[in-house]
Image (cartoon, rainbow, N blue to C red):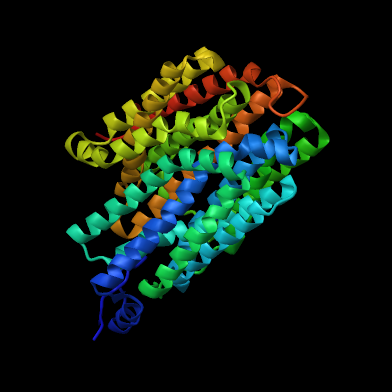
Length: 482
């Protein structure tokens, strides 16, 4: 006979009847079902993370085949980032309210649909739409993966091992992306990156249907639909303004209208979130200093790193003449260093606290980008690989502690919200990094064929990215608690 336990609650348990209602939705499965849940969530996470880094290697081929300029390539990345950032917090709320297994499956299915649209796209706008669908699916699935593990595994060693496996899946997916993506583009064309997602995603869905038990929180708050729509509109207009500014003119009428609408949407969002009883983004939480600091450091981290992945992929293939496979191998030291070091960072933080690792990590990333900016496209192979290793080490030192500081700044029953805020900040930084640094390159390069004159803006863009990373290091050193 199946046994049951209470699922994760957004607030303290109410009357006994309410607790029993919650318990009925959170069965404790046996060990085979636990292993299937772990396999489905980790494989789904691996799928999403591998795709994130693999797509960068396909951008030059996409540019040639679909006749996209640099702004178009930025949208291939930022359509995903904007959709992910806009829906992330709502994705977690939907799972809590209507079923985590259900929305994990919906998210993975949407990700597969976006992959198919992207693979079949004959024109760039359709590819961009497919990427937005992928980002929406990822935003629905990823929050459920952690929640499902939390409700499937009991506290203690089993849960810790499950969470460690989840973190390893993240690192391995990121590390595999450049090599797998480069090989696929070389051997079968850029569409194969998206086609690969189909069989892997079908396997995730099959395992999830068989092995994952449903869980939900009957006391989850109602959805903040006005806040969701305003946030999506603001992020989209902000990204549009930054990406399209070099082509349309920063002071042109369309740009001025876009900036004005973005400001109005932001003001409306803040006003609604302050008045709503259960807001999508609890602004009161941001008054907690450590959460705000963690969010700021997270945004600085991804600003430089996601911008680098775009520019380095183009630099290696367009300027150095590397094939997609060779470019993927050359990029591999960055995610590989991240994946290898990440499992040990938790022990380091336990011993000395998060401030020093975060400060050192952000400093290494900033220094790596500044050195890359100084040598431009002329760095010898060994020097370039050393820079990628330094960047990977810095990323590993900061990624885990950032989320830890965010979660540790609030009461346990708000840990999920705090983690969502940190991840939202990460995606905002990624979106702005791709948009701003790409716009810098586009402004310096001027008109002409795709990525023409790319080196003219590479040094400036990476220098800006490095400065933002170093600003994050200063924030961490000054304000992260010891």
